[in-house]
Length: 289
Image (cartoon, rainbow, N blue to C red; front, side):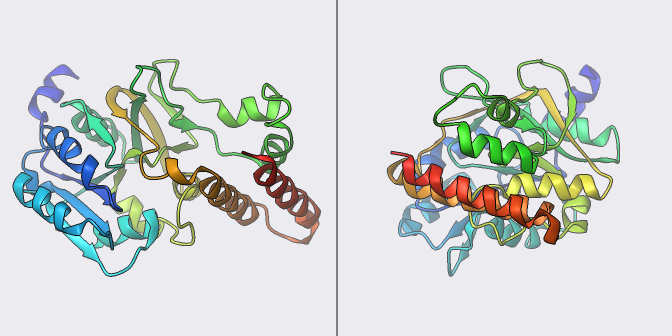
């Protein structure tokens, strides 16, 4: 593995896509680390969702040599990534999707690509995502079930340590082992372009949140694997663009959670459970501060 890593320290068959929505304040630091991970800066693409700070973003992209795709409207996270992926050169085999408030270790992208290249069934690889205090963010988890979704929504506020919330939050990132998982956090993941296109990319019906859960689920349904790669490390500041609108973002998060579980569990027999889930999520948003 060490010899392989030395030969692919800065891979040329990968593109990094980040989505900016008034994120110019984070882009300078993001690009400073991202350019150390790929063969050339032009492999980095910023997709801008009709931001008010586009002039600053243009200047930063030009200074760092990154590409910039300006969208005329805000298409949400998944929609912006899809637009960026469609614009990539045919030579690109892997796409690293990353939030702009993130910093890469120099070998992180190489680790993700090398792990994926070891098995053609691997469609997505995800790094260990560290918080600024050094703790691990739960970035690799199982696909949530309707039962877990209802239990978490009903009891998380009044019984934080309930078994459904523990199951919802459980992840493999503390084990330190490369593992197949249900889904990988969209804050940073590497996807095989062929697999990404085979499932139609991100579902643009999710404006924000759960588009990564949905992608991992659909990749799995197509016979692909999602794999956590702890040797790849990134640091995520997190919450920069949504902190000022926490309750509204919680509502968006719950709407997306409901959409995913309603898509996964269809049919009239499960309608009562979907109604309970919708009610539980509505109550949780109403009671939140």
